[in-house]
Image (cartoon, rainbow, N blue to C red; front, side, top):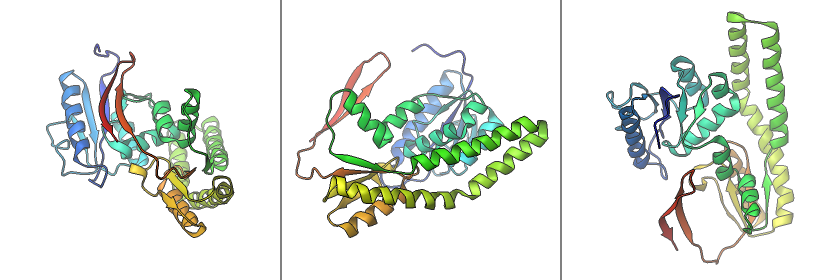
Amino acid sequence: MPKRQDIKSILIIGAGPIVIGQACEFDYSGTQACKALKEEGYRVILVNSNPATIMTDPGLADATYVEPITPEVVAKIIAKERPDALLPTMGGQTALNTALSLKRMGVLDRYNVEMIGAKPAAIDMAEDRALFREAMARIGLETPRSMLANATDIKDLDRKTHEAERTKLRESLSGADLDKALDELENQWNLGESDRKQRYMNHAMAIAAQALDHVGLPAIIRPSFTLGGTGGGIAYNRSEFFEIVGGGLDASPTTEVLIEESVLGWKEYEMEVVRDKADNCIIICSIE
């Protein structure tokens, strides 16, 4: 691909601490990304909370931030550095979730930052259980009987209310007063996160009870947007079902689980495929 001339600086989000399922392979990929982008003449800004990595070596990126990988912290780095693009695909699940949160918060649009490597819609389609199921249906592939348990409706209402408050401030204030008021509003929103999470979980648990009647037992519970299916499991009775669903909703940053009929005993084939924009595909791994 030819070098893009409209981008001068790129922010890379690392994977953070080494955990099971997300280890040194992301340090390797992030390091290679830093080197490759610098060779092309781009200014590279890196944020990673793990100082014990190669990618955080002082000479690798043009600016390195050893800070917590949270949307709020990365938003402040974006406000300071003003990168042209954000590359989230080198930091695993942590980076992807953070990038999507920044998109939903309006940070990327506010500072005119383009997400590269993978577009938000593509990440959502791969990680959001409902969108993935719809994508499979469009190409004629069957999926097990399932039902989503989430709090999408009340989440959307909360976001619209929050955005309406932001709009009201923009219409009535300007300059430093506007910035201060917006910061205070965001702080209040962030402080209410735990209360909102509990309300969302209660709502989703009520939907899960309905899903149990539809799907039956045993049931497979799959949380959305978690690393390697963290928080999921197989429930063989009602007690296990509600315990696993509760853990899955808590683990999911979107407070969502897919409750699916069990296909235990089926033979499983897994293929890792890499595809580019020109529809060139290679199979790099297959597992039976």
